[in-house]
Length: 480
Figure 1 (cartoon, helix red, strand yellow):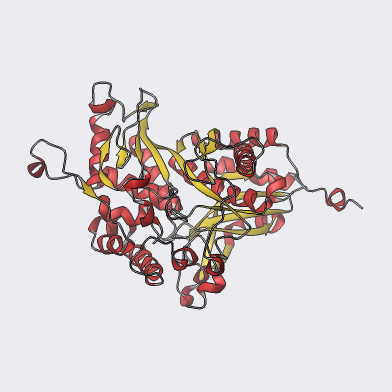
Figure 2 (cartoon, helix red, strand yellow):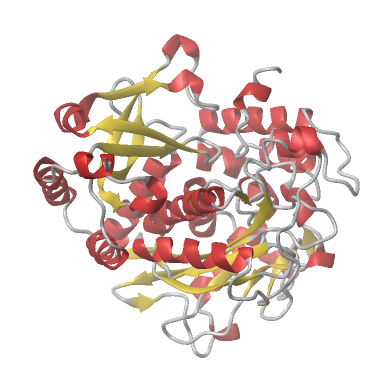
């Protein structure tokens, strides 16, 4: 007997998915009223009988992705009173005040590919609230949304971001969680940059993941193997920072789901294998107003405006203060090695790929700055919030010290201990994160650092994988 025919759960073809998710994304970009969107989504869920559950997702302080499935009827009835145990989420509330609330962000609603996520399910992003219903300080999704909405309302400005997210594909399922026992990752391809035959495992994975990402409305532009063995990159077009941050979480989730269906593991550890290029997440950023690119000036240095250069200079001047946000794990500091095209120099350059900021060739519509010193395990909401605040509000370098020249080249920390020390002493970091979240974030990073050898050495250590915030081996973590 065909049980799926009996159940009759929702299954939408990929072309229809892309149209549905594309339309929803367009409404977000056009800032259609949230109340209007909520009414549309509620009516859809009420009328569509083939939906069995709604997945509500949120991200913790470190950027780990969490998902809860709600019965559709229960959700529609109780959407204003969804609670969960915040004391079970690293970096959230203490056990004495554990109950937190979830508020649904109805515009951030996605129809899912049923062959990857199962039939009859949709996903919607949520934001965390305290017991009194106010935004929770450690939820940087709500903080990013609040800041970008205020920036658009007060100044008409929009932050546009296009990320380049690299990952590795390893043999076997749960390869990261079993690293404690195996001590190694196995490549499934050694073809290298752009080279992958149409039906080899890496190419099949890339094709399958990219199809699903297009169906989710990510608007993929280019998908290919990267420099290192078994490494991939799938690029999608720029969007408002809030939409892009959500899409980063969906990108990684989709890659992990697709890899698992092939009996493989998709890993976004910054440097899981020594001796080869690591994973980065270059972020191409521009600010616009009324459709005009505020970073463009045909007569400016490298085609950038004075406003863009001030944005860059503020971030470079405060780079060491925020490095722990851009590179949040022990393993991330292995990647900041110039021998592997990794950017550890605190400077901007049009050509030097070891520079923290690159200025790509651009015109009036494409002028942008590329932040290269970002690892793919960064919390995307905290990352964009920090870059925005630092780029717009951070102190500029003292002109008296520059003597009309750009500052001398400095270097990012080459280990998490120095990054923690600099972040801890930073007034700017406290101002951006707030005292409570700044302290919580420091505690989490110190705990991770303390579980690993202080010297990185040439070998990737078990601790830096097993206690990485995205690996989430809860059983092992509870042993400490």
